[in-house]
Length: 184
Image 1 (spheres, rainbow, N blue to C red):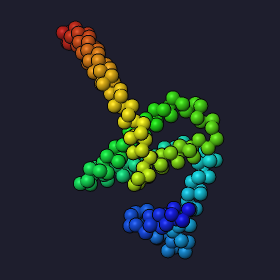
Image 2: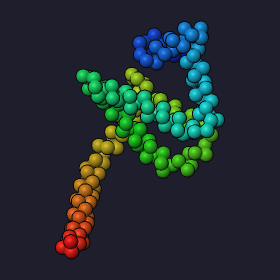
Image 3: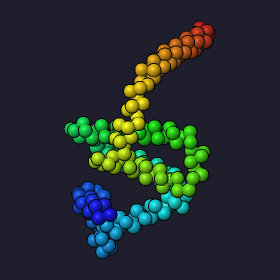
Image 4: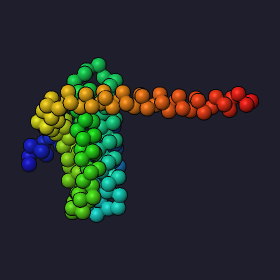
């Protein structure tokens, strides 16, 4: 527990827009930053447990910061952060796909959105505790390496069919418009 507290203290000492806002709020209220963060975390947890729109809040948490961090990663000269956030988005997309098909069952579990939010925070956690990197290397990558040739073959076949269908529709539309153009 002390390690977590020390890590929070180090995070709160960094310079970024969130800590700047916390410093300003601390100066106005006289309440220490760590208590402000603990209070906000408690309110967020309670809202996820009992609030209306917990699904929206959970999706905003899983999307807003990662999108911002991804843009920063794209703009940075380092490619390591690009890999971290690209891995997050792969895991996020797969989670969203699984959630889509299981949402009718999962929705009824108590504290589902708290668990989902905790999972998304785990996936975006910095450093060696990054859940997206862990899941990618332990689950996604092995499945990808095992099945990617079959998936590539299906996608190639499917894209060929789609192009053929689109060309047929275009020919049909052009053929039906040609008599109309002659009447003018």
